[in-house]
Image 1 (cartoon, rainbow, N blue to C red):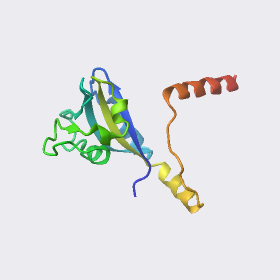
Image 2: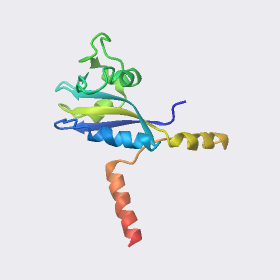
Image 3: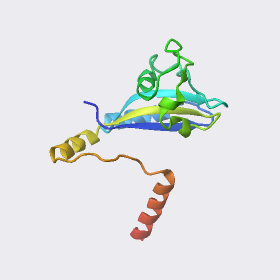
Image 4: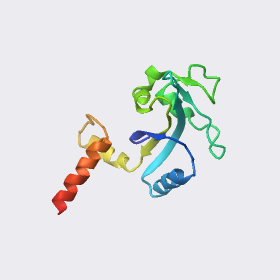
Length: 150
């Protein structure tokens, strides 16, 4: 059974793909915290169209396939490397990637949360909402926490 899965959208001005991010995800996987399910590289053209990009040479050949299946279908499934993605089916992904931008869209399973989710269900609880604090809210929280520790 798959635990809670986060869709992480990371924008890049000039992608370098040095391997540093994958190394950190590997460390987190080895610690039993997360599992990288898939990564999709996407660009958004000047007309707003989202297109999948070819994965770096060192990456798996089928990279991005699961993300496309879950987040939106390419207009022509036979065009694996540069297929257009139906922006309407991409929930807020079109809003997350700026015009002319490039992003990596990662599906990350939070393995640590599966036992917590099971415990909540056994206690008769139901997850009502799941969200992440925006960057500005995290900054505010950090400031407030620092003030209380002073």
